[in-house]
Image 1 (tube, one colour):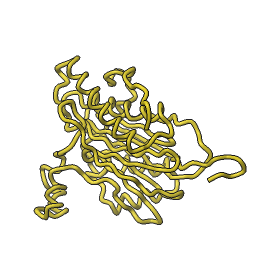
Image 2 (cartoon, rainbow, N blue to C red; image 1 turned 90 degrees about the vertical axis):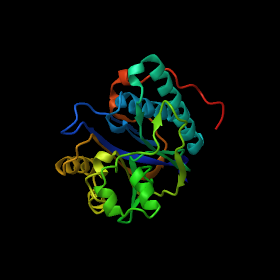
Image 3 (spheres, rainbow, N blue to C red; image 1 turned 135 degrees about the vertical axis):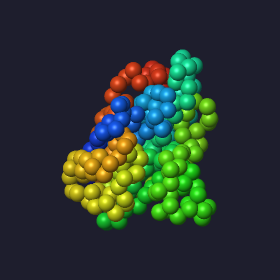
Length: 277
């Protein structure tokens, strides 16, 4: 809305944290948190160069969003996923030891009016509104497919040794087919994006409790600490963001995890301008 000559835009105020965890030697989680883009990518299953896959995916999505503010959010996210796929192909061509690298990708992007979600794999996005927690993403995993088909209960899925087997991921071999949907967000909403290092060990009821902490910084720190204390054996990444309607700001943000090391990105110069959106 317009207010005293200043155009207000839907955007995010955020806190974010990524921890290698207590059982992993390196962080294969990556991400970006900014006023218009929230993104988490999780290198799949400790596969070869998982940190390269996740950092490259996060970089391409964030660079694309920063280079094209105001573009159609859904189209931009879809284009970025395709571009990241091509970058991973180039990465494998350059170094055969990277063969098999893959990553999840969960991203929320707004142009100030419309907000879109793109999702591949089992990193998750949640909405906390008026105290009620809703999962915005749908796991693309073997156990979730079994739940959807009625072959497994959620309780059985939690105990399944196959619960981390993803059916969709961003990799160098297959064209990505992310779930894409529009989100109806409003000021006062709180979002949380995280890797499965959080959700594998923390139930939704506890997530809602932790997300209700007023301070974004404290909520994020408590999510990460609680996941580690609950025995998470994975990297742990969480972004907590409040939706606001305020005057536009520069879209720069914070890079997380593997994204902080430029050597993990296949080609930082590869993001090219779009003609239209």
